[in-house]
Amino acid sequence: MTIASLGYLALYVVVLLALAKPLGLFMMAVYEGRRTWLHPVLRPVERGIYRISGIDEQREQGWRGYTISLLLFNLLGFLFLYLLLRSQGHLPLNPEGLPGLKPSLAFNSAVSFVTNTNWQSYGGETTMSYLSQMLGLTFQNFVSAAVGMAVLVALIRGFARHSATTVGNFWVDLVRGTLYILLPLALVVAIFFISQGIIQNFSSYHEVTTLEGAKQLIGMGPAASQVAIKQLGTNGGGFFNVNSAHPLENPTAWSNAVSLMAILLIPASLVYMYGRMVGSVRHGWVVLGVMTAFMLVGAVVSGWAEQSGNPNAGDLGIERSAGDGQPGGNFEGKEVRFGIESSTLWATTTTLASNGSVNSMHDSYTAIGGLVPLANIATGEVIFGGVGSGMYGMALYIILSVFIAGLMVGRTPEYLGKKVEAREMKAVMTALLAFPLVVLVFTATGAVNSFGTGTLNNAGPHGFSETLYAFESGGGNNGSAFAGLGANGTFYNMGIGICMLVGRFLFIVPVMVIAGTMVTKKRVAPGPGTFPVDGLVFGFLLFASVIIVGLLTFFPAFALGPIVEHLAMRDGTLY
Image 1: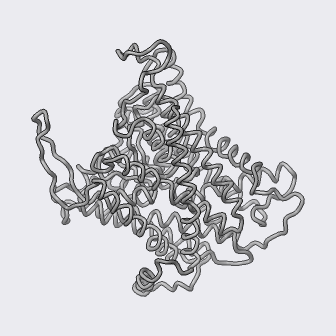
Image 2: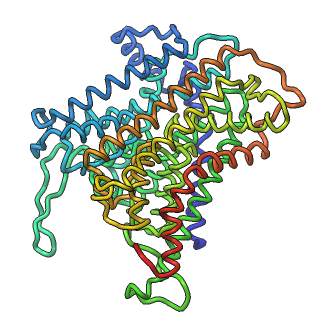
Image 3: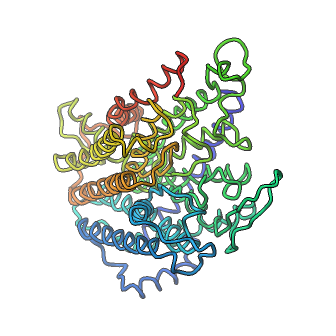
């Protein structure tokens, strides 16, 4: 990588970590019910919501009640969104007269936005009405993010409390996360985006004449409001088909930079909040350091691969100097106004987080450049991850690391003063194994059947990577697309939909089980065999656990896709 690229990456990391502490402290105050500077304006609104909804904010729930409330809320959200998408052709705010979605696409899209995945098997400007974008998709962008944060807060209470029976009130956590955190941040970011040229209107589409004299239809609509929360809530669904590569969705270098920061802002801040609320700030910083290390490795490797480009450039008719490499790097599929540095950093951050937005075409990356996003999602997106979901996913790896350390010294493992026993480990392994199981089964099915391979744009290992990425993106609740795959068919719509449900709720339910078991336990005093979780040794063990359990599970699949493609490229064979 160039000095400029490394400087850009360093500046991004410094700003991100500098913002994590103040926002983390603010979010901690919100979830603890303490007064903040927003309370004079928003506290009356919060009380009004409770009064209308019949919610008693003083009444807490056990883990079962909390989980049932969460699942029912998501079920009702799915049914509402499914019916809205099916019937949008008969509803207002549809100036282009777009019809309702077919059943498999409506199912896939409804599951996608309810699970905070935002996978899109459709083009936004040619499929969704303004009403569907606002009332359906943007609404779910807010509440699906708030649900993830609520689960994390419930887990934190399970660790922080002892000899208790309750983990909070789901409805209160949902309201506070949406009202005090997501809405104010999204309002500020949306106003900034509008100032940069992202559109926000209800106009009909504009027909224009291009410089070549052809006619082109330019999509319009309320984009800025959705773009803001899609980034802040680690949702990622594009208002337009090409997502954040579209000039009306990401027009300037400033909108691109703010979007990049918004993707990881809340996930990074939640890690600091986690450390404060469980009573170990140093532990929070160690976990944040591990996540940052993964991000730096991914960004450097991806940036190097794309700036090196294709060693066969001469065979493609591209002039180059002697030796390997491609002058200027691999610019295919990237926006000139963003360049390789910003494109590869975006690809890294968006797949470290549960954010499906893209500002370049991953399908056009080199084999190693494309391997980085695949590897990021393969971890279960616990490296920063989605808002809430990233940290509670990482907590599973933390418990696994502590368990391994306990086995090494021959003692019952402890975490934050509480014994980690069989029930917690069963919940951890259920979550960590469900994701690769469902992804690899559907990938294998698609790779050997015509209904899976019939819509691939590429043969060989690159085509396999397209299939693997699609199911990984769904199971990891990421939502970004490798592209090069026609996914709007029954097999992919239903298969990816199932992966999204498993990737979301077979993480949430085990996490809530852990919260419920941990909250009842008494604290034990640290002993000579207690493994400290606030030092470098723990950081290395956690780093290794994510690699061994997360990445190596997918290594055979990577070997069939990007790894063999890279070796073939070095030998002069392209796919």
